[in-house]
Amino acid sequence: IPWAAAKTAKFLESAGFRIQATGPANSEAPPRTIVRYRAENAAAARAVSHLIGSAEIEAADELSADLVVLLGKDFGPERLVSRLYLRG
Image (cartoon, rainbow, N blue to C red; front, side, top):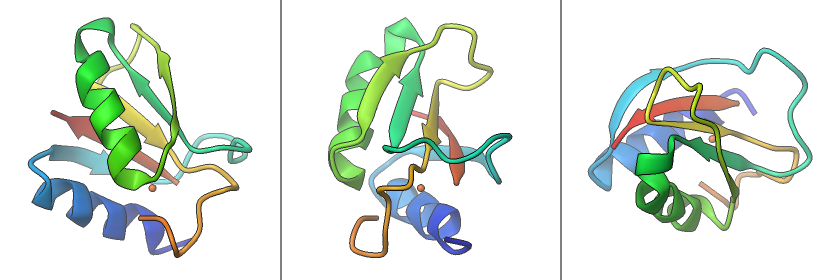
């Protein structure tokens, strides 16, 4: 969904998150939307998951951003994210 990352970034900015970058994923979309986070950002990951519609969350300490949101094949217009880098 070409518009999804930009629209979701604006939505998350309005909720108080600072967006570092948006762009296409480096691989095929996962089956479900995923929020990856550094250990110290678990609460922010849960908040983003809730805001965008119950995305899965998983720890990934090798990230270059606080959070990374990968839009999955389950993501559609009725949910408010190809890939977002977030700083919360």
